[in-house]
Image 1 (tube, rainbow, N blue to C red):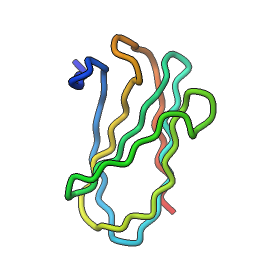
Image 2: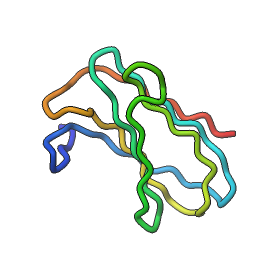
Image 3: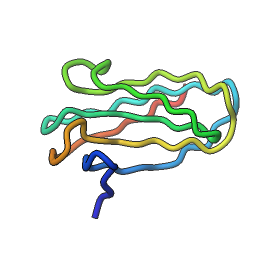
Image 4: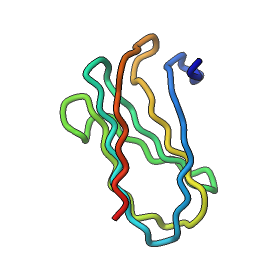
Length: 92
């Protein structure tokens, strides 16, 4: 029941509420597929990562420059890939 992006890759999304100046470390890991992590600000700016988490894992270390509700998107890099994954968020 997961959604597909326009490139036909699978994704799931969540929201996180933050204040300007908050910090968080996002880590998306999978033994089954190449991960792709996206954060979208309340005004629509996107921040992406493919492999900064090591190997094919994704990592974003964010200091939020905009308060409000951000969208976190866990995505497969390649269309058709599926499998297990973990998404961790360490708010600092």
